Length: 199
Image 1: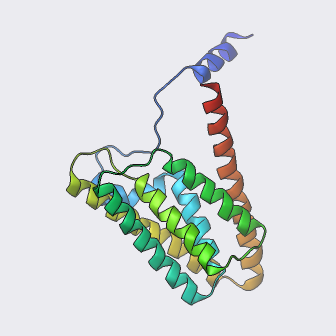
Image 2: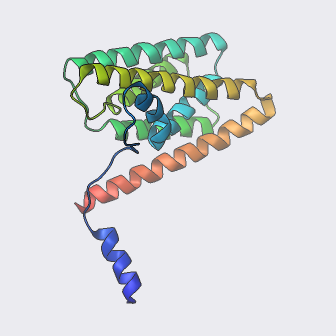
Image 3: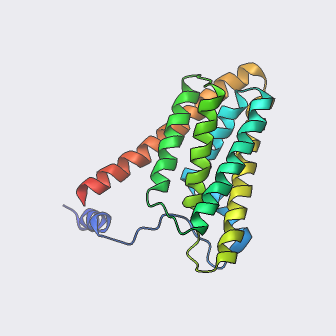
């Protein structure tokens, strides 16, 4: 084996500290929370998928799903304030992204209660996965408020986009986007499962 290839293999197998999220040093509070769903690919993919799914429903249902998201995010924040935590939130977010992406790729428009359930679980998981590594309750509250605000904007924008496009383009484009989101989420999940099996 060539030295460069051997060095690459050794570096890939070497243990290192895992960093779950992209972090911009020096940016915290509301601004840090606002950027969080945009910088964490699992969050962004799932939010876009949920927004596209909402866009396939009636506008009254879209507004209801946004309300469900906001309520679920507030409930998750209340649990965090009572010192609850979740260790596998990002894995759950990826699973939801894969499920919603597959639904979009298949052209399925679920009943509103199912869409509401997926939205509520995603909102809670995103908030739990966005808790900043600080001890200040005020800083945590600001950060999670920013995260929930950005998440609602991303989901609303993708819902509006899928609803605003002409029907033919919307049907094909949403299915293509769903297949990409599902494929991305499934690949990351497969890599995580294989990595955990090696440990």
